[in-house]
Length: 113
Image (tube, rainbow, N blue to C red; front, top):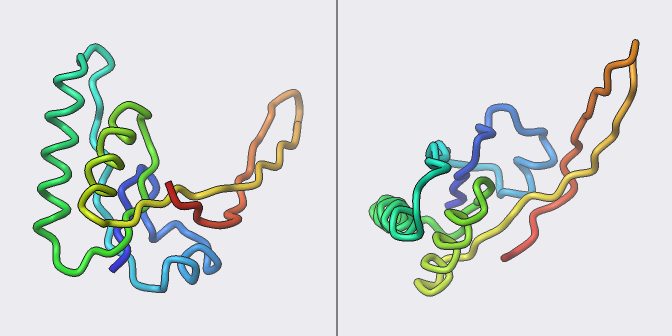
């Protein structure tokens, strides 16, 4: 099973991204990571989410995108447990309209950590 742990729920994903994930995706909201948290805080939060993921049934791949220290800590734990972790890659197209830059992101692929 493919778990999406990001700030972008799979309901908003393109058909291409859903297909690349295998069609069936479970969403888990990315935590609010306190900017003043120290390394111990990050490790504790990563352990909390690691345990949540292990409690889920049949998770084989985790799509993990968000705050970098938390992401690194959790990816490290998940990979050590044999769980595949991926990041999504996108193509950014920026258009300027009336002096305002608008960026559109198009999914390209998942890349393994």
